[in-house]
Length: 196
Image (cartoon, rainbow, N blue to C red; front, side, top):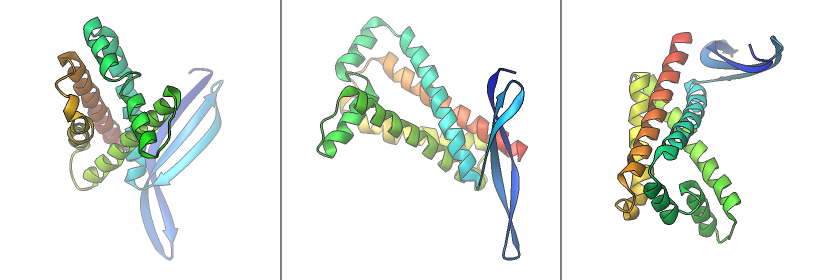
């Protein structure tokens, strides 16, 4: 174990109120230091809490995959992306949000806004997938369904005007990234379900 490591434990907890007992998904997060528990946080909530955590983790994994893919793209496709969206899509989104509120901000602030929105979408996809899971849809399938819908409506749907301007490699990176998010999300929900 590392000197400063983090562990996550999924389980179930019971809440007793007014003579009734309700079962909840429970998530405990531990931070270890030198092999011993240094801090412990417990979050008890319904399945959406687990879904939100899974969505956040899947969003971070997606970023790692797409960053690696971008480094392997051709110079021409990278140049085209910089030309169409200076600073990246998240930065451009942040500027659009600021302009909608009548503000002018620099690229760093715009990127922070874009990244916050990106993480919010990730956690929201996790919550939506957890609702599908509770309705009987298999967790892995739920993750892929939600992510596919988000890809079509949010990502590609909001960039129809520039859809053909990007090179095929750029679209492929987006597809791989969102497939990764859906698979990781579904896998984490499956693991949470098995441990509960």
